[in-house]
Image 1: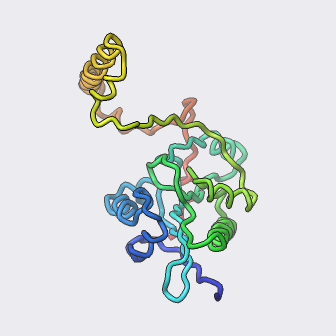
Image 2 (image 1 turned 180 degrees about the vertical axis):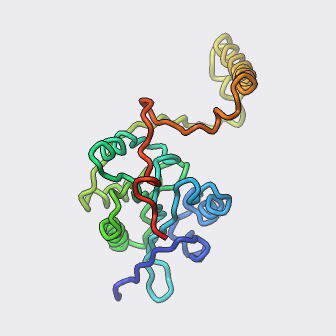
Image 3 (image 1 turned 60 degrees about the horizontal axis):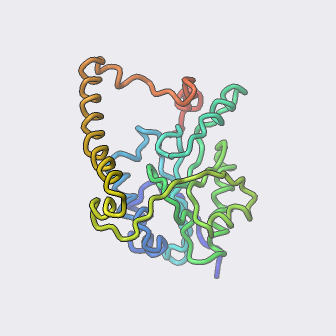
Length: 242
């Protein structure tokens, strides 16, 4: 097979949905429809620091590999907090943003990220992404919530692995909340039911009181990362080129 053609595509509509979904393997969060909805709704847009750069490999019009890749101007919507890295760059006079991000926006669910028809194409896709990072002068490439196959591919390319912990609540077959309560001692079940009903109402009341007492202008103040230090602004330090 000849070397596949590499393309960076900014609009997901330019990629046939059937070909993309064939590589996604039925993962709902990697589906063309899900990612396209994020794009068309404006949730994933330049306004919020997301610039789509879908990395794709083609051969005779067929999509062999694809990566949900974004040029990021901030670290919001990733569920991985790298503000300390941004602060370290800023303190040393370097630009952390823009960076490249391979991920599903706003979705901290592990799954495939290097969509490929074979291990060979997967490796080529990742090498192409790393080269694209260097060619465009980005600070770094981040690949979030990888499945095992993609993690091995990333390690083979010398990428650093980030260790984290997620807490998952498995459902052994509960059809309703009462099924879950039925597995508990009666007294504990009563406490859980009380908390499940009263706590949301309390939070709702507290939220309404806060909105009434606090000027609405406070809602639109600049967000601050952990530690109370402002996040370095890539839009000011290194504005994107047209």
